[in-house]
Length: 179
Length: 367
Image (tube, rainbow over all chains, first blue to last red):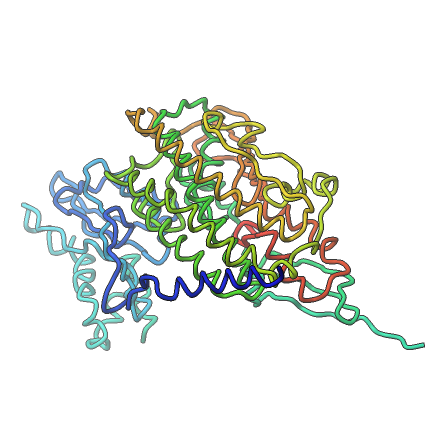
C-alpha cells in the first residue's frame, strides 16, 4: 500500500519525540570526559630530564625545549608547545620515558589573542651557578625571558616591553602581533 | 524551430551537499545535465609530500586526516603496509583490537553516510537519529583512543593502548542495541516512499562499468559485484569471522544506500564475534619493535577495505628512517571518476542524490 512507509516513519518519529533527551545544555552541564582524553598537556617538571624525546617524536615540531648548562647539569629553561600546530596524536606522551608528560581532560584551550596561543609549560630562569662572577653576564639573555613571562600583564606594560623581548623564545615571537 | 541554449551552473564549492569543498561545473540543457565536470583539490594538503619528511611512525596521524570519518581504517592500511615491509608479527590481542576499532570506525562512517544521505534527500529526522548512535560510538572510540575522529590508534607493531576496563562490555551492550537502531533507520528512511521515489533507478551503474572504472566499496557491491577484500583477500585476522557481503541488484542510488545499511549489520556481527574471541586472548598489544624504524630497501603495496572502498598504501623505503614515498590509492577519489557519466541525462535535483550515494569524503579525495 502506498504511504505505508510514511506512516511507519511518522510512528517512529512520534515514539522518538517522547524518548529521553540526549542533548545537554553545554556550558551549564557537560558530558563526562574520558580518562584518556587528549586535552591540554601537563608536564611534571620534577620528573622531566629535558631529553627532547618528545620534541623529536612530534610529527609537527610543536615542542620547543631550551636548556642551559648549570654547573655540570643541564637545566631546562623553556618548554613551550605551539599548540596551534598540535595534532593531538599522543606520540609525545607515548615517547616519554620518565612519565613526565601527560594529557589532561581540559579541552578548553581557546585564546583571545594569537600571542597567547603557545602553551608555556615551563619558562624559568636557570639558577645561579656556584661560581658567582660569571652569572650576571651569562644570564643577561635569560632575564628577558623572565620579564616576558607574566603574559596577561604584557598588554598593560606594553610600551616598555617590545624593545626588551625583541627575539625571545620561539613561543613568544608572536607577541607583537596583538598591538 | 525553437532553439535552446546550454548554460553553466557551479555546484559548490560552498554547497552543503558536496560534503566538503567540492565543485561540479554542470552544463545544463534546461534542467537536464549534459556534462558534469568535477573539480577537486580545494582541500589538498599535500599529505603524501609531508610524509617524506616524517619518520614512519610520524606518518600515522596524517593518515587520520584523509578519511576522518573512519580514521582507524586509514591508520590500519598504513601500519599494515609498513609491517608487511618489515615483517613484523602483530600480537593476537592487538589484531582483535584493530578489528574491533576498525569495524566501529566503519560503523560510524556508515551511520553518517546513511544519515547524511537522508538529509540530502530532504529528511531531517533520519539524520538526527543516525547522529545519535554515531555519538555513542564516538564516545566509545574516545574512551579507547582519547580522540573522537582523528584516532591515531594503530601503531606499527600493534595498537597504542589496551582497551580500558569495562570498555568491551559497554561496546557489547551498544552492539546488542544496534539492530534495533538499524531497524529504526529502515523504518524511517529506507521504507519511505518519497525517499524510494527519489533514489530508485537513479544513477544506475552497470557491473562491468563499475569494474572497468575500478570502483570499489559499497558503490561496486551495489552493482552486484561480490568483491570485498575482507572476504576476497583476508588481511589481518578477518578470516576468523563469519559474515556476509551484502550486494545490490540494480546498482542505483537506493542500492548503494541500502548496501551500507546492510553492511552495518555485518559490522555489528563481526564486532560481536571479536568481543567473544578477544576474551580468551591475553597478552601484549604491541610487538617488540625497535624505537627507530628502518625498513629494508624496497617497496610494498598493501590494500584494505575501508568504509568507502579499497584503500591502498604504496610505501617505498630507501633504508633510512623516513619513507622515500608514500602514495595512497584513495577510494573516494577513484569512485568519483565515474561521476560525469553517472550524472548525464538526469535532472538537476538528482545531482545531490547521486553524489551523496557515492559517499565521498573530501579529505580523502584531495588528500
